[in-house]
Structure formats: structure tokens, C-alpha cells
Image (tube, rainbow, N blue to C red; front, side, top):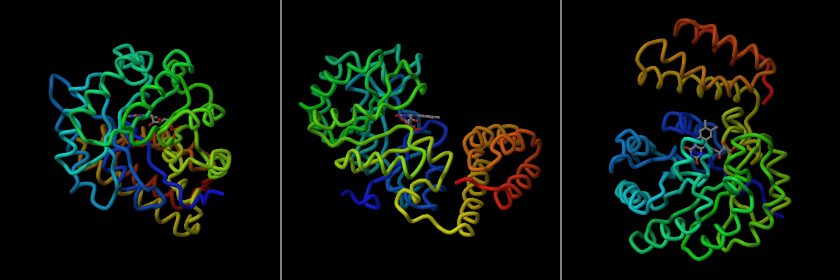
Length: 319
Ligand SMILES: Cc1cc2nc3c(=O)[nH]c(=O)nc-3n(C[C@H](O)[C@H](O)[C@H](O)COP(=O)(O)O)c2cc1C
């Protein structure tokens, strides 16, 4: 039987969330082995300095970061691979999962999955010109889950470090459930290691997934960790006691607020950003609705700080 405490747990790449500030703060809670940065794009032949600053090794001290690229041209992947290799990274993750229509209609993210010949030629070129260890994060398809089979055939013929599967199709966006039932067939057909991503919200769900698929050794978790920063430690059985938990939570939300305050101009921007976090963080409380409402009603930084302290130290938690 697989020892769940040995499973690699990673924070999923999430634009607006899995940036250096969030990665650093959540890493202090423990249980997460690696952290995927939000995707990097090449626009007008260049990479935004902000994207590279986010993964600068000195800003990510002590944590394992995996950069991600969103591209549909080998030259773009090679450009990002060179940039991240120059910073000391050996792995680059290729985003073949983003479902948003604006992205997908440009044959990027999940929108590239129906075009196996393009994927094939990109991989051939990248492989010939770079020794970067490319991993792939993908959905089952864009329009249909059958699209995955020809894509797997292509991936099987190339040097891929790992395939991280989020078993939804692009058109589904985040509707319905991640289809775990397809996982054993994907594992059987793939010559590469397969990791799982999608809808893991509780330690019990992680355990049952690993029991059903004992060859899985890597779970990538996104929204589950946004709603419950202790989820990885709960899965591994290293969760702290209630007292330590409240303290860690206070440090977590406090550090993120402090660092965002340094970065953002003015209370308005700050409160707006905090509200996007609290859309998820509110789920930690028995009264999630009231928690989110409390944050939304704050008009000043001081009010926000006081209200959040009351909530984190005093309100009933469900995590
Ligand atoms: C706000 C948000 C931003 C995301 N940004 C990215 C991204 O930059 N790259 C990527 O591959 N996936 C991105 N995703 C998808 C997640 O990495 C993950 O595949 C998805 O949320 C399903 O996993 P989960 O159910 O554990 O959240 C994003 C998801 C969310 C909710």
C-alpha cells in the first residue's frame, strides 16, 4: 500500500494566487513539497520582467518552485526554457489545460489539445534544441474527453518528465466534477509518470484517490489549498494542534496582507485584492458567508486588520 505521508503534494499554478507572496506564506504552514508558479507567456517576443521576478531564486528561498509556460510555438517554449534555465531551473511545465475561451480559441492551453500534429512538432523541436525537463499539465481534451488518447500517443514518443492530468474537458471550465474514473486507463497508456489534479478538498478524498491508483505519487492541489491551507498537512497526517493552527493562520493571512500592502497602491486596491483571497479563505469558517461579507464591508486597512484578527483568532473553524 502507498504510504500517503510520502506522496508529493504541490500547489497548483494559479494566476493571481500562486505568486511568490502566497507561495512563501503557505510554505510556512507545511505539507507542500513544490509550488507551481502561474504561467509565463512570450508576448511580442519578450517575457514580462514581472513574471521572471516572481520566480527569482532569491525571492523563493527554501521552496521548490516549478515555472510554467503557456505557448503554442516551440520558439516561445525555448525562449522561456532558456530564461528559466539561466535562473537555475531544470524543469518547465507546459500549460495544456487553461480552459478560458479567450485563450483556447487562440489554440493555447486546453485549446491546443485537438491539434496533436502541432503538439508533436513543438515537442520535436524543443527536444532537439533544449535539455529542459518538460512536464505537461493537461485536461482530457477541449471539446471531448477522447482527445486525450492521440495526445498521449504523441507524449509517449517524447521526453516528458511527468503528465499532470486534470480530468475535465476545456469546454466544461470548472463545471461538473473531475472524472477520476478515467485515471487508471491514462496511467496504463502513459509511459510517463502520471500525476493527478482536480477537486481534492479533503484528506479523505486524497486517500481514496491514492488507494484506487497506487502508482500516483504526486497530487497537485489548487482551490483545496486556497480554501484550507492545512490540507497538505492533513493529507500527510502532520497537521498541528488547534492552538498552533490559529497562530499559523494568523501569520499566514497577516504576512500576505503585509506584503500586498507593500506592493499595492492605496487601500482600495489592497481591499480589492484581499477580497479575492477571502472568496476562498472564508470557506475556513463555519459561517463562510458572514466571513466574506465582513471583509467586503471593510473600508479602511485598519478596519480590515481588526476584523480579520477577530475572525482568525475567534470564529469557529471548519478546517
Ligand atoms: C484562480 C485560478 C487561476 C489559475 N491559473 C492557472 C495557471 O496559471 N496555470 C494553470 O495551469 N492552471 C491554472 N489554474 C488551474 C489550476 O492549476 C487547477 O488545474 C484547477 O484549479 C483544478 O485543480 P483544483 O480543483 O485542485 O483547484 C487556475 C485555477 C484558478 C482557480
